[in-house]
Image 1 (cartoon, rainbow, N blue to C red):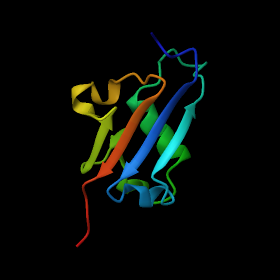
Image 2: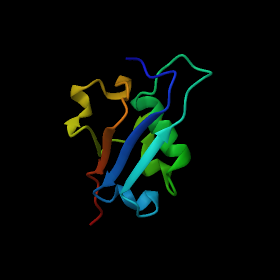
Image 3: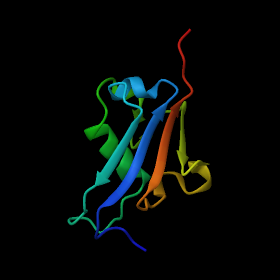
Length: 107
């Protein structure tokens, strides 16, 4: 089922310190709006851009690098490593849970 003609509801979570970049809020229920102008469905690539533009509060260089997350951010899609489901090209479905976990820690 392609999701380009409807909004998509997903849960976006941040952990391991990544939540500090998002106003110290670790869980967000997100309704991604309908993408009328584009035939592309919502995928991880477009979600990362949306998160950067709508949820990120500070220091984008610590979260994004180009169109993806920076090295050191582990991404889980429904508790599965996103490398196993297609990384940036994974098409979001309603009720997906996306977790971004920072593995970068100061010391």
